[in-house]
Amino acid sequence: MTTSHYIAGRWVDGQGSDCISVNDPALGQPFAELIAASAEQVDQAVAAARAALPAWKCTSASERAAYLRGFAEQLGQRREALVALQMRNNGKPRHEAEVDLDDAIATFSYYAELAEQLPGQNRDVPLAAPGFTARTRLEPVGVVGLIVPWNFPLVTSAWKLAPALAAGCTVVLKPSEVTPLCELAYGQIADTLGLPAGVLNIVNGKAETGAALSNHNGLDKLSFTGSNNVGSQVMRSAAAQCRPVTLELGGKSAILVFDDCDVDAAVQWIVAGICWNAGQMCSATSRLLVQDGIADALLPRLQAALENLRVGSPLSEEADMGPLTSQAQWLKVAGYFATAREEGLQCLVGGKVLDRGGWFVSPTLYADVPEGSRLWNEEIFGPVLCARRFASEQQAIAEANDSRFGLVATVCTTDLARAERVADALEVGHVWINSVQAVFVETSWGGTKGSGIGRELGPWGLSGYQSVKHVTQCLG
Ligand code: NAD
Image (cartoon, rainbow, N blue to C red; front, side, top):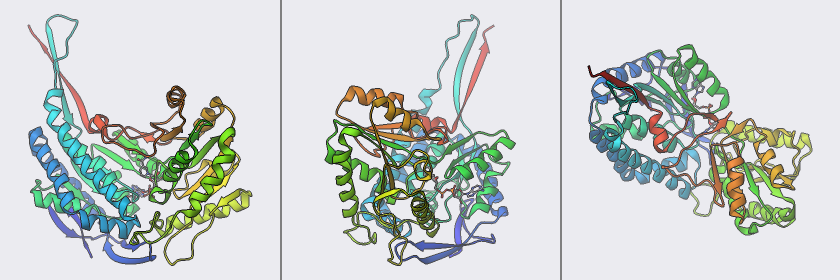
């Protein structure tokens, strides 16, 4: 398969030097191949987006809203194929793949509504000085590059694509080389809807293609989701050109469980926070902080729940958790199991890869992990949970905040005054109280500290693709 790039409204063959294998992680085997886009093709995609910008940004907000609703509807019509592809390429069990698709649909529907409200956002600004009037005009940032990872391909792209198109930007999207097929659906939908050529361009490829896009001087903004290492490089490219960048990066988030919690509910939240998507979530709550008074009751039940989790092929109705999505990720997690052994960590469950042909690992729990442990501090991106005990609320907050990351946190307690107090004290972008990984399109997404710059979703996601202009007039 070579026709995997959508440039200027046409499907084209890749002309790059990289060949990309698309794998089925449950089998550890490739099922498709494609040729990456060349740097020249990235140029063509940026040029197409630039050429399409003047007309697209002048479309009415309701016209853009209609296209976004079309994307939502067409995603729904492709449900079975997209769910099946995510099960096969990502290793997601069906229920997880369904949630992703619904999330992508909800994102396009939501930004269709926000697009319709755009004209009302241009307003007069009262001035204290006499003799002048002023008004705002929210304009699209321009041509934006969108670079995304593989763990939630449809969703992460939707979180960028929908607000960018709503704002009136034109885009060049580069999916991950691990999951390059999913987002091609957006190109097919653009064709079906008759989206003007060049408004949406998709170039597939590895790091080289990503770098060609992020270094390109034809972009007005770049929005990146991925690792901190690549995020730094993307930020350097943006700095060289003094151009804005949104970065959604890694996490090492905490889940805080207080003594007054219902143990069974807490166990459920903890397991979902580390095992959904096989732990391959930037927002995985991979550091468990459990209060002294509940720890002895909770840890054995947590251990049993992780042991009982059914790990298997996503095609099996029985599987609670699928494989890791790539061999590289599987090797990385295996490396952390080796580090845990070297560090002498106490493993209550798991700690090993599973010998099943595909890239499976067991859900894993380490107890009483020292603060200095690499596993306590580094993002693993797998179903690997580290636990520590705490005595007081202050200690829990201090330990949760003692991280270079600041993406999310979960607080489990029946004392709601304490829950709100702790939520306010946590240095993260999103806190869940007595719930886990509940993401709504109306609320923001993004982190503090090393977890990134900027926010996606909600009105904040839209403003990331807008620029504020003031028009001031002298009356006389
Ligand atoms: P990655 O950084 O390796 O790759 C992300 C994307 O960048 C891919 O499309 C890749 O091809 C591209 N890329 C690689 N090198 C590049 C370069 N030099 N220049 C430009 N682009 C380049 O990340 P990954 O392994 O795909 O994803 C896992 C990471 O993503 C984790 O750290 C995770 O926490 C993070 N993530 C964050 C969020 C969030 O919302 N904060 C969401 C999902 C994933």
